[in-house]
Length: 121
Image 1 (cartoon, rainbow, N blue to C red):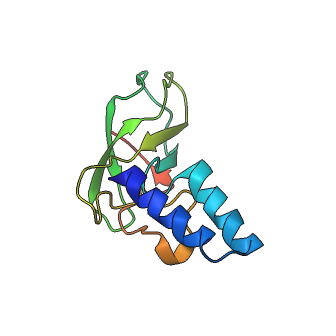
Image 2 (image 1 turned 90 degrees about the vertical axis):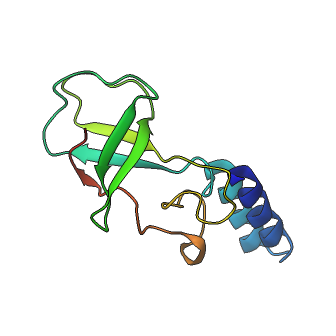
Image 3 (image 1 turned 135 degrees about the vertical axis):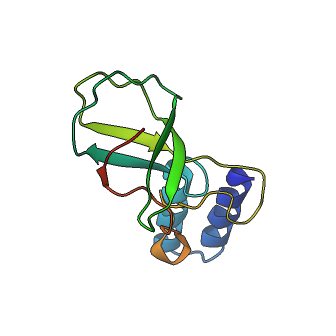
């Protein structure tokens, strides 16, 4: 579903037939938006233990809710910045509550994006 949504956005931008719209289509192609959304989180304290790629991570979103995602890669004890990949699902609309990446602001959804600074569990 997430890839299909990105493909739909790419097709809509290409349909405008302008340099700017082609550039926007390329951004969605390269960075996703509905798919491949992730957060880069600066931790308030360095990691006290390592985290393996794809491990489940929870953190606080900008709206105060707890958001679950997975570790973008392996992280070592002492690291102070980590990446968290948001889940995508099969539901066509709002499959993920943080849609960013290559999407323009008018199509982005940051309501449940992880805060830029905080802690994880």
